Image (cartoon, rainbow, N blue to C red; front, side):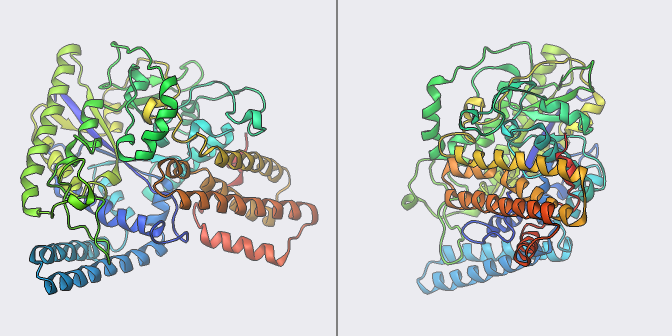
Length: 572
């Protein structure tokens, strides 16, 4: 028997961008992620042949991402995007040759080859179907795919249990449609969890959300009713201690925002008895089937998350920020963690393989030492769980997929660690210990401030109003249903789900695409409110105006997601 196990947990997510802009914010986010992350990850997974048949990969594709990757509008846009990148590389090469810059001309060839390969892989090898490629890898037993809330809603702050249930239930049904089976596990957006207690709306004094504290279900109770068996949490939620956020190094705005909250933050005392290398159960066994959770390992996490002293900060790696226009190709390397853009040196691809080799070996040795220490202390076969955003690999850290492939190959050859997935480990070693978890997330300080602060409070006012109205609509439709009301209610549900996306608050708080996020909140709220008035008119008069029907058709076309949506999802 192996001394222990390891799994990457890769969280793949982008907000809904189809029909909502292209560049600099919008469709190109999806195209970039497909070219730089999803295709390279598929390639890395295919290349490794694990001895036990299973790679150490548990990967989540959020329902809203899966909907976009399966959309024909994405497929045609992606091919055009790749063609533009290839054309821009050719233009760059001609420019560099004209001024005698032979090294950058060589790098332009590098980019031309990268995007040609991506185009060939997408159109020929995958027949334009990224979802099918991931599904095939799961059917082969190489990876496990998990689900998420439908549009990545920030579940602890949603004002009603019906809305939490709708996000998660639609996440399950969308997964089943795309992957042909039921998911075993889920990624809670932002690893954000809330137990059962008398919940007070953070905007109650302004009249939004319940006016008085309301007994809310723990999120695990809703997961249990949906048949989901596990989720992922950050280490501080299990063990206490200082919560080290995964985003703060990457966004200066978050560092400024954190200073507003830092003074009131007090870490929970650390619990030495609990270990991140074993799953636990959460929930009341007398009332429901408990749900398991796995815990992020902080030691392996910082090796990859930190852009300052983790692997991605190596000076020889491709720099993310400095780009050449036209085309946006990158010709410079990190150089140093604090180097200004003007001081970036040219990228040297031939120096990268040796660094990837060394860093991947270091990471595997770290995993082996952690497993050995856990086994020596407990005599139990634990598992190191290493969660990351998938888009970190390839998009933010260009060499990331190659590094990940090396780690997986070395783990396949390891004599002390086997690659696994969360679901497989749970089947082999079902937990029995039930623990209580505090409310929290994987943001800095471990709570909600990134998503709820003075910059974002206005967004929650609209979310809470829309949630109340959607639950009202669901009840009315349940009592008096007709085709026109039903159709309008379905689109109301889609607009609410898109309004609830946690991405909008994150983008506002990080200032990374603040104007775009604010416009999207306003857009989905305006869509929702007009459709709600249309629903009321249909309810009262049995008919709506011609303009309203055209508006509904426009919304159905622009926000064409979740074909299986049912207004009854919002019933108590």
